Length: 357
Image (cartoon, rainbow, N blue to C red; front, top):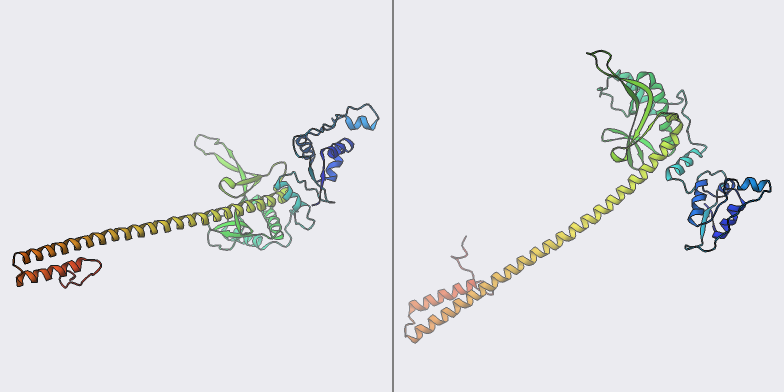
């Protein structure tokens, strides 16, 4: 869409020379959008009787423009394209709905009689014929519509779902199963849905009878689940008349769900990366502690070996000093030296007895 940049004074001149009804034809804004814009930029607007007085050359009261403004004097307006009724200040749902409604090729009409039924329509009829109204019938395995209405309104339900399916396919979507649930599938997002008939409670008429729930003929279409659940119900406007709005909601729902899934995926990647980082730190710390404890143990072994050698030297010197360095004493000295060499981590002398397992 093309845009135009105006100053506050330029927009002021426009709203005092052109009725809002014509401004919304020139710019892609609603009447409320123009009013909000003027309020945002502190631009006064004509009152209700201004244009009638101007038309008949009567005296008018024109609020003077105040050039003092605390914000940026820059207003961007979107120029309305010919034939495009979308307003940029509308909600995404309204914009998407109008986009679908303005598509001349979109199959938005729900006929009273189905012409060239969709495969799902055919399969739903097959299921009804086989099940014979048995809600617990589970032998039919083909995909079908999730419809829960009375026999009297089955034809209307099929007409609606057939048109709904054809519009889905036209927009590049489909209907598929996910975890045994029939869903609308849009851009990889499965959205549960079902069409049911509303019922009303009829109180018991006798002491020993029970209340009954009687079908009302009003249809309810539900999509999504939990906090994302949305329902449309027949009222002054029937479901058949809001196909575009229903599909617009489904497409936006899928977009938001996809964004949420992507955000969850990125969060999970960050979470896993953080876990991996912490695990590496933990393993490195454990390895460091293990190596340190080994160092302490080897140091203690080495000190013990030194103590033993010092003791051996003292024993040998004492034997020499007392002229008692006998053959037996020398054998003990040799044995003790071997044990010190076995204990010393720098030598690690093998010992047949101490190393035996």
